[in-house]
Length: 618
Image (tube, rainbow, N blue to C red):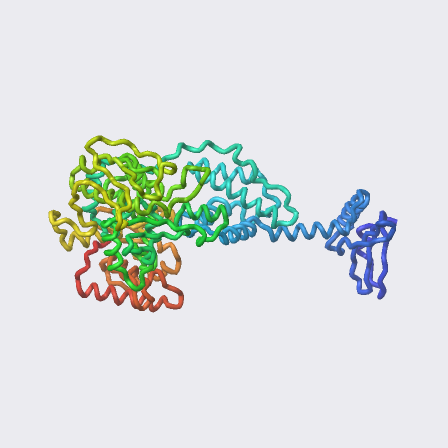
């Protein structure tokens, strides 16, 4: 007899367990207390088996029969329904645990174990930024098992359509790496939906190389650089790039222990050098197994380094410290913004200085291997595939001193003397031989001669006309003196144009508000802004942090009307011994918030009393 809904509903407890059969192996079990549950009986490998299908009334008679039919179909296919249910539950649990975000977190942590450098434009920092903005909003809670190629293509297509093909290319690569990693760590995942995404990739735009200057353009640039209106350390940073050819990242990461001034050398560890870092990652070798990048320093470069070391503070870490904290390094945009201020936007970049040096030294007639070693380029000879960053040091020492002297000639307007080609004579120097060195470019008969030899005292001689060297640090006496007011305005302008101080429009975009609303917040005293003349308002981006914004707003509410916002900005960002050499805005916590407010308000009060603030009210 087949069961009915009414019969099942009216089945009562009798004080003993009993079972009411349906058909095809389904039955209703009623316990002594009246609890009702569904069971399915079947034969597996000659033995009677029973499995639960759920309880009544949570599972109705109709649903119980459907589950019974599904189980019978599995038995007919030679599949044990109990084992299949356990497998299905395990997969469901794994699907819930293995969301895309969970797998992404594991993959990112795995990548972080490698020798990837940290910094805003490094892979390790770009991945979280791009995934947070472009990928996780769509895939965060999705099971890794459910994600299809179409899902990934939709994301990549969206990135391409907004005009970011290079980001789309990176995302395709990262997707493939992530899913290859998932195939190994996620049980039951058998397909990589990110494979072959490049087949439908939009063509990449032509590569835009960093612009650089040719030798005839150097006199004007050097003369403008000498008069740079910003901070001296920024000018010296650009000058040191021009005197050494190192990368901007290597300059920003320079620390005092890297400089051996008695030997005239800057020894950069391999984990700092881009090419050496890539070699370490590819070959999985330790930094100590790769020779460092050895950069010989000219007299002018040594003067700059000595000056910066003389200015070095106890709390400082890097040779070129940041503006907000002595423990940080200068921003990656500082040098490029300085070139923009000099009028070289689109004409020269910090990295383009390397192109300027490479082009000039090759045109002057220096051996290509010397130039490549100076710039830490990969040896083009793929048979040897060696890194010559520690080779040709003595040759490069004379080459870079000659280059530094030529820069002084360029700055003094002696263009013809500065750009005269060399005739290089290789005379008995053991490192250089006919088998390893190509002959340099020929030069005019009147050109000076660089004699690369090994005299008894070990020095190297360069036969050129005397050079009137300029101080790399001090301003020539012929330059007009800069007044204190001008100097202070230059300092404020440098701060105003720092990368973390955003225009109202840019700040509004990051805050997700309208420009009008941000302007209202500034006028209402809920946001700190600074300005200088007609340069427009700037809003520090650290106010996007809720705790730092709370600190700022608490201070603004305690300030008298009309107080100079520059005083507040300086008090917030100036390092303090009470915060272990860091600024209040960098070290504020919920615990020290009250103390930070008291400290900043006290500092602003002193400035107001002195009435000597150079900043402009905003």
